[in-house]
Amino acid sequence: MPAQRFDQADEVTTQKNVLIVYPGRGLSGGVTELYNIAGLESDHIRYFSLAGALRGKLNLLDTLLMYFRFTGCVRKYDLIHINPSLMKKSFFRDGLLVIISRLFHKKVLVYWHGWIDDIEHKTKNNFVYSWLFKASFKKADASVVLGSVFREKLGAMGYRNPVYLETNCADDRFLKNESSEAWSGSLHKPIALLFLSRMEKTKGVYIAIEALRILNESSPDRYELLIAGDGIEFANVKEYLELNSIPDVKLLGRVDGPKKHEILKITDILIFPTYYDEGMPLVILESMTYGIPVITRPVGGIPDVVQDKKNGFISESRDPQVFAGLISDLCKEPETYKLIYNMNKESARAFSPESFRERMKGIYNSL
Image 1 (cartoon, rainbow, N blue to C red):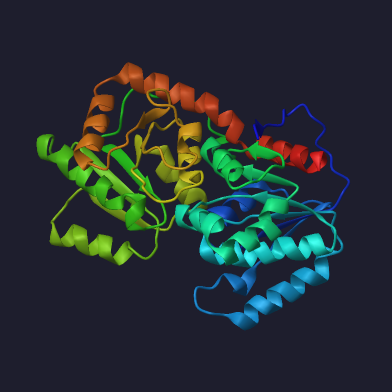
Image 2 (image 1 turned 180 degrees about the horizontal axis):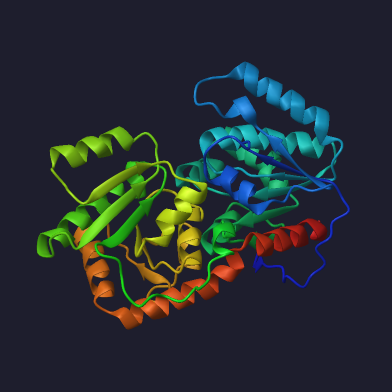
């Protein structure tokens, strides 16, 4: 099934009622952040919070209460927009939401945000997973994916309904009042590298740290690394920096809103050597919105947005030496940096919340 896109000129006013199922306004994570930024809620579009059903430990009562709340309100809506990841907990929890929606004869849109290959394999080879996929997600009236690779995977799993290729959106509200978008022509001193993500090993945080160490061994104090985010690996990263006496690294913890804006404004290069099962990381869209060159890996939907040597650099490698080399080369070529900066600013128009809202409403109207 070829991917479909909606032109912004399409009719975007929906008079049907849409329910968007998402983690909840007060929670952290990319899906919550996406819908907080997007601002889709209106007279005809409402959000449904999964609330306690998202907690890590077994919470059967909270999950049952969530299903009870969902069953009580689903009948009021014409289209149910569900935001799963192909991960074990989300697969079962959200698959049941799809089944409940279809029992009430509602249209269902499934917007895939993450993808674990092992779960994909189980949908083809394990009876329980296969049955649930066929009874729920495979019957969704349409699906949204964050990369062409996921469109192909859905097709291989037997999905035959429309598939839309999306890019999420980035928070640009703090840039609205900026006087100039032109690059100043020079990098900061020291050159500011940014790693911004939930703190997990597979996000590539240690690769970023080692790349910085390699850079500053040959050019002492020329670079600094800003690490923003929290998560299960935060304490280990802090200990790693202390044990290895790595200077020029600032651990900032979780940042959002104005604080994130201030960090992005002073960032020269985003280093994101992830080997996690990504969908489309918001940090890449956010960085491109600020014109920041992105140095990353071809995971998930990243290659659909980041073109090598146009928006930054993509490497298959996990070797910190490779990432250090890419950073060093870029910093020696101001004309290349300027071209990438301008290209990212131009590309970011598609990531604006306004563009995202119009495209999503176009998909809603198609259903």
